[in-house]
Length: 178
Image 1 (cartoon, helix red, strand yellow):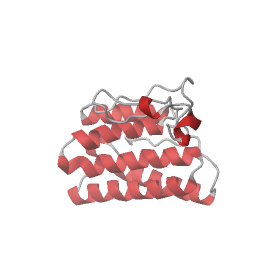
Image 2 (tube, helix red, strand yellow):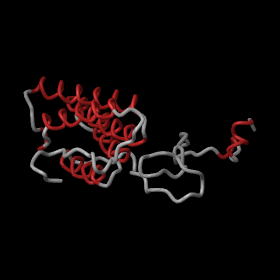
Image 3 (cartoon, helix red, strand yellow):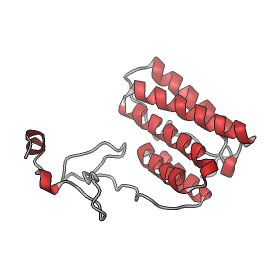
């Protein structure tokens, strides 16, 4: 057993694995996805690999964002990115980047937050422009891009100060619908 594994109290032979034997970290997580100590009470994680309709994805991600859980919303977007049609993957990947950007900003990581908010905004904007689509699945692309760039500017200006993820969560749909 290596000293790094010994210092964490978990021998190499008991590394977390999923049912197929792939390495998976089973440590509990907080609401922003940060790992907690084994045995600590954490927030229930999103199941991986769930295939949802696009509207279900938007609705579930919005509920998670409103609850101040952007890390969990990113996992919902990631499922859509990986299981959806090829021509929509850039949209869902960009939305996942926006959620991770908010996660970093809420954790106080200004550099990562700003970078991912701007990258996600550019990806979503580019995807919409290429298709002439401004409201995919009822989402307000213009509003999302404006939200992301505005938050990135705020985070950059107040570097080091974390943001309240629930209070700063975007409205995916401009009509206020979940």
